[in-house]
Image (tube, rainbow, N blue to C red):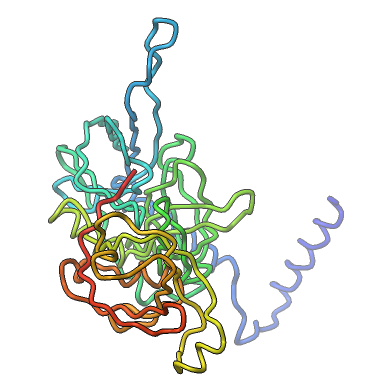
Length: 348
């Protein structure tokens, strides 16, 4: 091995001193990697002071043998995005927390208040009262390209201010939230994430946040996901303003089913699937509108419905307490109803 290395060194040296001109398209790998390193280092220097460790207690469990057990605890990451102490993180990090504490990179330790929590997008905003906070700029996820640099900063397994780097692996992924709702426009990256990275920023080469790190697929390697920053900006704004995200509720439990071919042809339908109503809540908007168990929803608010996820996407806050048209198949009939969705309250 030593002889081979020595030979390669001599060969390279001979080429460098042979007097021959380098090809016009010659690229010095050393310059490329130096530039890459400088970019990652500059992003880390700029953003690391804004990335915090979040520690939560979820409430005191029942006593055992007359002795109170220790509070269940957990931890994650977050980042300051306004100078007055607003911090973005994941909903699953702080949801149902009885107590939230934040550790800053400069050694500060602060009690945090929950501003708002949205399990449907796995995003939350908390706030601390601390001096001299540095905010991380929020970028845009609308112009991301597959293959561009992606840098993650967080606290995996409690190791504070850990940096990993990779690329944007894919765009427009969908991810199932703990609430069961589908999160759209998720960023896939191969920047390594581990438990504790949740809520930390995913950054571009300018040091701007392009996503909020949220999940990995285990035991796979390099399959990591972040909520797009455009989604995060919208959700954060609503959480700061209202403390919650308003979404519509019609009160059904459904399942995806295929529509019989003869119905598709007879009614000239553009969709091949629908949502079968399995059950309805008492006094729900669906029941009051005249829908029944066994109906198959094929259209809502003028939009085609081919599955539960389509229906979730259409149940937005603008439709709360407004009349919407819903079309169903009931046995051999195509029926149209008017329904008034209510505001949905998230149930733990």
